[in-house]
Each structure stands twice: as C-alpha cells, then as structure tokens.
Image (cartoon, helix red, strand yellow):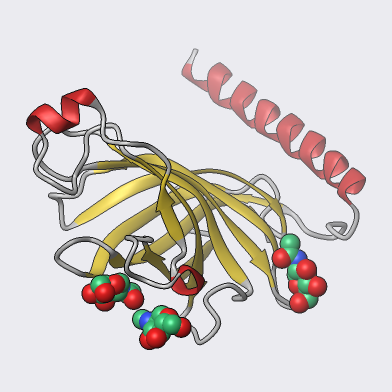
Length: 202
Ligand SMILES: *[C@@H]1O[C@H](CO)[C@@H](O)[C@H](O)[C@H]1NC(C)=O
Ligand SMILES: *[C@@H]1O[C@H](CO)[C@@H](O)[C@H](O)[C@H]1NC(C)=O
Ligand SMILES: *[C@@H]1O[C@H](CO)[C@@H](O)[C@H](O)[C@H]1NC(C)=O
C-alpha cells in the first residue's frame, strides 16, 4: 500500500510538472524555465523594505503614500485607544526599497506595494494586510500577492505569498514581516519583508 501510494504520487507529480511546463508556453518569455517546488529550501529569497507614510492632515499630500479610507466606527469610538480605530481601513501605494532609506521620489520607485490594511483589534493596534508588490524595473517585472494577519504585538509575523504574475508567475511562499521603524503615532512605519518563495519558475 505504502509503495503503491508513493509510486502514484511520483506519477501525479510528473503529470503536474508536465502540465505546468506546457502551460508556461502560453505565457511567453518563460520557455526554458522549470517549475521548482522545494519546501525545505526556498527557491528565491529577497529582503525588501516597505515605507508607509499616512496622510494625517499635517504632512504634505505629495509625500503621503497612504490614507485612511474610513471614518471611526461607533465601536472604535467607544473602545479604541485614539489612533487605532477598530475597523479603520487604510489604502496604500507605498514605495518599496532594497535599502532602509526613504527614496527621494516617493511616487516613482520601481517597486511598489499596493493594497490595504485594516485595524481589527479593539484596544490595541493589530492589522490585517492584503497587497501586491508590483515590480517594474529592468530586472524584474510582475507582481507578488501577499495577505495575512499582521499580529503587531509579535516581533515578526508571517504572512502568505499566495501567488504571483510575470517574473513571479505562480509563485508561492511566506513573507516574514518585522517593523523596522515606526513613529509613535504610526504616521510613518518601515516594514522589513523577508520573502521566501518555495514554489517558483527558476
Ligand atoms: C508627518 O507629519 C508629522 C507631523 O508634522 C511628522 O511628525 C512626521 O514626521 C511626518 N512623517 C513623515 C514620514 O513625513
Ligand atoms: C514632505 O513634504 C514637505 C513639502 O514638500 C517637505 O517640506 C517635507 O520635508 C517632506 N517630509 C518628508 C519626510 O519627506
Ligand atoms: C514602468 O516603468 C516604465 C519605465 O519607467 C514606465 O513608463 C511605466 O509607466 C511603468 N509602469 C507602471 C505600471 O508603473
């Protein structure tokens, strides 16, 4: 029984690989690459920094990269510490860099993080993220899509890389988030993202 299921798994894996490599032909430019799935060792790793500057009515609009899209909810007004509104949704289009420094042109980096986070805890900041990292440089084109709970009381938090497009076609993995710097009012924070892909085309 054990031998049978092992053999059938190998056959199933081969069928999946054949299917995927023929599918890749339809996505031009990916010919010659092969699908790598290795859960022990990542097939691709990168460290990136996301810079989020929320418009708080005092910062200039040109150097704000995110904005609250909701008014305080009745529940948040009743229970939340000020600034950490339960139900607050923030929409962002943030610069993403390889180093820690804020880029000079906040609106024009070749890598962007586009999406939203929402605060989901009554009395302390705690967030849930869903966003795409959009790559538009000569070296890398495409997107990685991330989502998951940002348990802000933890030093590091893992969110899922649920998929990708372009150079990251069908990618999957895990991104470990760490707050590298944050102002006390959270109007600016820099998030270190250690992205490890365990499924990629390499
Ligand atoms: C946003 O404005 C506040 C208030 O003027 C300031 O303290 C903060 O440093 C500014 N944040 C950024 C990232 O510019
Ligand atoms: C934000 O923009 C204003 C006006 O252009 C500028 O004075 C300020 O230094 C900028 N702040 C940051 C942190 O870039
Ligand atoms: C990608 O970069 C090119 C060249 O800098 C630019 O013309 C284009 O608008 C960018 N596309 C996106 C989606 O940002």
